[in-house]
Every structure is written in structure tokens, then in C-alpha cells.
Length: 106
Image (tube, rainbow, N blue to C red; front, top):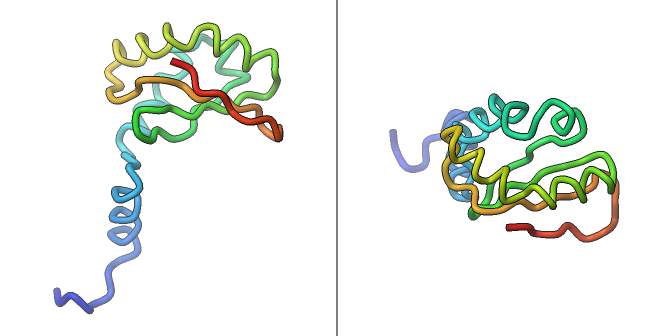
């Protein structure tokens, strides 16, 4: 393939994702163990986003759940590592639809 030949969309998106630090296999693995890591109740109110530079973005549906997950963040990071999810050092918890600035939690 020549340098100026078009790439299949999948290959182009893979390159862009890699340049942005996105690891699709980590993302899939993360979603598969999420409920086990945070528990059924929290999983019903919190959704993992992407991992970038060691920070996992987590979306929650209320301020109360944001507070709860921030309190347990270090325990969740340990559980993620134990579940085989590498590269998560801290959580950034954000309330969906909130204009409040997200907090980074170790």
C-alpha cells in the first residue's frame, strides 16, 4: 500500500484512537468487569467512560453517587487492577448533564 492510498476506515480510526491514548481492548475489558468492581447498586448509577493517561472517566447520574464513588475511588482502582485492568491510576467522576467541573480522585 502506498502512502497516499486510502486506508480502510477501521484502520484510520485505530490510528487516531492510538494517537489519543485510547486502548479499545482495555475499554471492552473494563465494561465487562464494571459491575463486579463497583457492585450492582453503583453500576446502575455509574458508567465507565474512557481511560486516558491513567485516568478513568466515570459518569454518574447524581451528585450523591458522585460523592459515593469519590469516597471509594482508591478501592475501585485496586479492584480494577485485581480484575486485570491495567493502567488506571485514578478516577475522574462527573455527573451527567452537570456543568460542575469534574473532580480527579486518586
